[in-house]
Length: 190
Length: 184
Image (cartoon, rainbow over all chains, first blue to last red; front, side, top):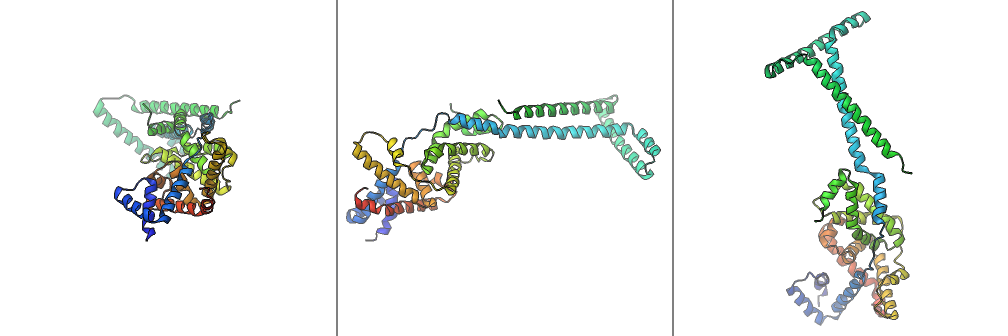
């Protein structure tokens, strides 16, 4: 009798996944083979003992204990705040740089004169002046385009400077606010 | 209607910690039972379950919604238990503990024999190598399907089935003396 052929069927029978044809074949074999019959009985016996798991209830304060630890970690709020701070820093730096560049464009003659008085190398002084004049031309072209599109906008440079300054100040305020909140959260509860 | 797990996870990722509390309430029984069945030491179980939930919380941003949250959570619990077992050899459940939680329908003598049988089987189960013991526990004690076990253990289903079949036969073999004594 080739019992190995029926090992898979015995396991399927245990799992309740055996089809009728295979089960009938197995039953026929079991009626003739004491060893396989005992094997199935033993396995059923052992598995049913394993499946009799004790009724266990998690402690009532499990949520509370876990949530205390979770609130202490607070990973995702911290990450969101960090992202906001980084974005605000980036925007503030961009705005500050733009304000510097625009101011330099507005006062390019003064900067040119100052550099000559101070005694900066002439090549550098002229290069800075040319660079600022180039940027001024680009802005002038942009202003002309806007004028064509939307009519005349008086003192566009000042308007742009004002807007950038407002955005910069807003971002600095936001960074301070987020950092204050972060510091407040880091103070341990008494 | 119950809020889907995915929505709760997305709320957690947006900083709403209370949404995680709902997940803890929903899955505490499952996780507790998985850990309890693998560790069999009630004093340690609470700490490990808490650690599992903290690991789940910390890894929420890595959760793949293609899989069931319960399967993913059981995988974390299983890995946590395996780490613990590797660090410390666990003793089988104590007989006092086993008797303490069983029902009272049988006579004291019958109940003692039943508990003794259960204890011996659990002892042998705990002696099985990990790769055979874990699928057996997840299938027979926690009621996971082959597919779920394959996902938890990250193994093909054919390997899971083979290990489970082999584990049953190994357990029967190791309990052969008990059968001869008439305990089984």
